[in-house]
Image: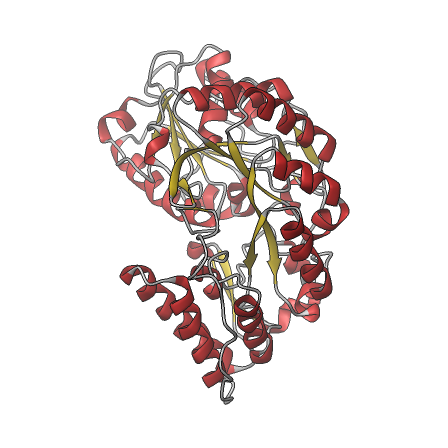
Length: 462
């Protein structure tokens, strides 16, 4: 698979780091990898394929091409990029790293990858570069790396400017947004999440000094808002609060957002008030469903009643809740779907949930923890290795038709820049029609009469 290398890796551009997609943010995975490599004496080049084209000349100069694939969309783009690199530079070593690299290691190693890394893998990436620099072949073992790392400050020098990425929109103002992480991995093991198969319920903190210096540099580059990209910012609340306090003391006008589980939001009401006072604009929480049956199947660790309590707790603290949803699973009924849409409208959340969330379908990648549970097996059809997912069918054909209808509604609404409230109304009508029910008049919503809830300008969550 691999030919003779093109040359030593210590020179500028001999290592090419590729990012494919990181939810509209400047790619933190690339900046972190670049920081590790630079500290080891390498001078990596970097491209963000979400904004930049894959340059043939830069690919030909590289002896090692490392492709970051932290999510499904990134993986699909990354595999195509690897094919192009192979055509231009057959001698290059191609490495995939990130959550979705490990989940799909069999396919990647069979289709052009020389190495696959995941978990706390930046030191392993450095070791790979050093191994190649000595003229040795890469190790192909795809085991996750779960050793505590000595983090450098992420190196963002070769990435596009922050103002080319997602921004915060709030009360008519647009703020350049940066992205940092205070921790990686997760204590919890929700079955549909890609993190547990790699991290196995472990998480690792990034030293406060490293996080703050990364914030400091992004503020100097124009950031007025920061997203904490931690899978769950409240896995280690003491560490997270210490970071926020120090950040707020130094940059009192800086706003931020974070992600946390429903159960953590309920467990830390006093912390929510402090986070609000320190500049928290909104919090994302993976609600996924309002069906206790679905929540149990996914082992989410919360109930429908907990969701309501969490919404009230976050609002009571003065923070906007932006829940994310997984409305199409094999266990979701039409009544569940109708209830979800009605609840979002009734709770005045139509501008707090991106319409695309109404069309999200359960993804079951090859390494998913769901595959170990018998409840999913009756619905699986076949493994589509090239699409990196197991296909499944809903037992109710009406749900499959509704999925197609909602996907089309959301697609065209985005194209037409339709207001979320109007899109929600169309989705509600489609759901009621699929259920053979006549909708009552939707409850009045304040979403179109009050200031728009804070949001990032990138709506995708997968």
